[in-house]
Length: 111
Image 1 (cartoon, rainbow, N blue to C red):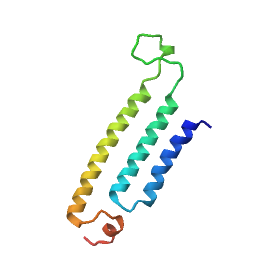
Image 2 (image 1 turned 120 degrees about the vertical axis):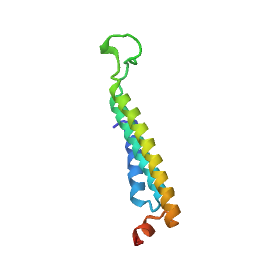
Image 3 (image 1 turned 135 degrees about the vertical axis):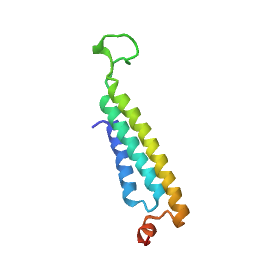
């Protein structure tokens, strides 16, 4: 197995492990971002073709890299940033209303 693939899987597993043990909402959001980055790296790793040209130059189609995975990953990065912004805004509202960002304290409250 390639070292690059092992590192990418390590990043994804680190994010999932952090999701499992995070007790704070902000730490959970950070772990979601780590998972997102690892998954983007994984898809770009799968789409990599050595010796191929970028689809910018007018070269034959057989020598060009497929631009669709790259475009999808750019979209995934933008959606991840937007989701992070909404989650952080909601966590700010939760903190102002309840005075805490701890999952346990928020789930134990009534109303």
